[in-house]
Image (cartoon, rainbow, N blue to C red; front, top):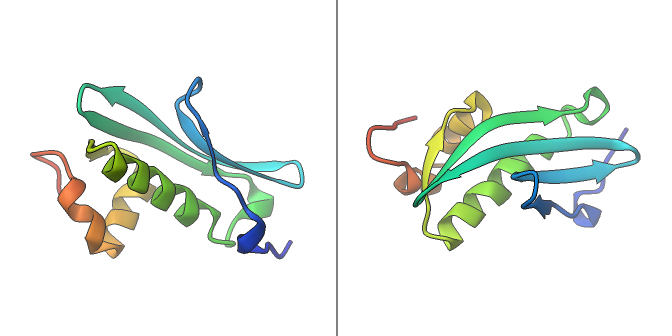
Length: 101
C-alpha cells in the first residue's frame, strides 16, 4: 500500500494519551504518559500494512513537536522514539535530565 503523506492527518487523542494516524482501516499510534512537566513516550505501534511508509516517524515527530510546544521534557522509554531522537538531533535538547539517546 503506497501512502500519500500530504493527505495524512495525525490526531492527538488526549483521552487515550496518544497520537494516531488512520489509513484505510489501519492505524499507527505513539502512546505517552504525562508526569508534571515531562512527557513519557511509552510505545509506538504501526499496523503491518502501514510499515515502511514513514508512519512511525511522522507520529514520533508530531509527539516531539507537541512536547516542544508545551515546553515538556521528554523521557523516551519507547525504543522507536529514542532512536528517532538520536537520528534527529534537533530534538535532543528536549531530553529530561538523566536521559540520553
